[in-house]
Image (tube, rainbow, N blue to C red; front, side, top):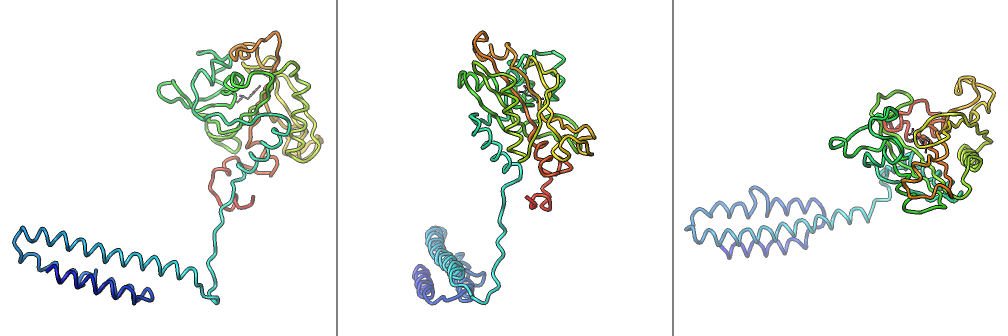
Length: 334
Ligand code: DAH
């Protein structure tokens, strides 16, 4: 039996060198490894041997089968790569589907560049944060009604949560860098709310923070002006309005002159001439103290901009749900 197996292996090794194409290879497979092939026909004779011998022969049989199978696989790989290398010049060619960077990722790169030119460090934070980071350190104590401003996805019985805003990293990076410092945190945030044309459960925010001896609202205004003029590539007017956030005092709502009608009034800005674009303010002393900053020496401003909102304005995108729709007709336009 062993001798027969040796003969089969030898024969397979000899024919291996004569395989020239995939058809020869398939014949090789049928002859040696196929269901009615040489090896299979031998294995049917096993039962004639006593148990002891059967075991030994079985092992050797498996060894030979494996060797022949390896010959088969290596030739197969060789033929396939060869087919790719020596291509037929008259063949029409295969269309290569090229992937592309998603619009949101592209815009994030541009935004990072603008802020980096303005001297801001670029940070991304984490999507999973603690209750303390997202709320307490930002002067939003438990049971305070202002917590209702953010519908939250809680995890592990309120121990952690998906950050509802990138403000969750203000204190963390202030502690890391120490003032004077400027940084932005850009990334995904989550809100447990119904979706519609303007709202999604996940979206992106740009958080900006500047703490220094003279960080003030007039600097903030010029940062906004430079950022938006660069981003939209047109002249933009900035307007501050009164607002309320627990982590800023005073707090502001920031409007820009409409990117379509430049303040004249159109359907996009609902005839007001202006678009709400960001929240901002001077950082509340409580928050600065959580970051161990001397509030008699340093001031800080902060702002939060919704990323999808500004991308939608720039490219005239009517529905925020398109970004994650996986609709290639949308994605491939950018
Ligand atoms: N975190 C706020 C939100 O998600 C946005 C915001 C407002 C951020 C004012 C700020 C700020 O840094 O000063 O609604």
